Image (cartoon, rainbow, N blue to C red):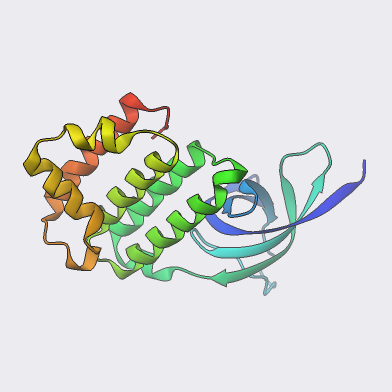
Length: 203
């Protein structure tokens, strides 16, 4: 059966070996949503670029008509995010968000907004300013955009003091936020508890 050629732009959420010859890439594309692609390992003498986690790439895939994934024919790295590796906490939280997005593949209609959310999160994590607060913002917005009444069902049921803390995490720029990391981590745990028990989002 004849194949087709598809062009995909997106951010790599996961890269893993697949046998001895290939890598399996999982991308989030603003146009196609979740995409899986098989990339042949370059030979030692090759100058072909090898993308890394969270690289923004443009690839050309060759797909069979009855297949949901494709093999990479061409690959171009548009943007690298090496700054993430300078902070273990930022990288760890970025990977946690990537796992959530992989487990909860956005529909094509929501792919662009989810992509923009991830892009903003990665940009903030590279600056290494209050990485815990960046994660809180991303998860809160993702749950809200998925249609869950997180503001009315969770936020508004908190005490006044707690609402003030949560609102500050959401509304104050991360560089100016004056909350200790352990306080924000506490709210991350409480937000994840709500998401895990009161939504269908997989963590």
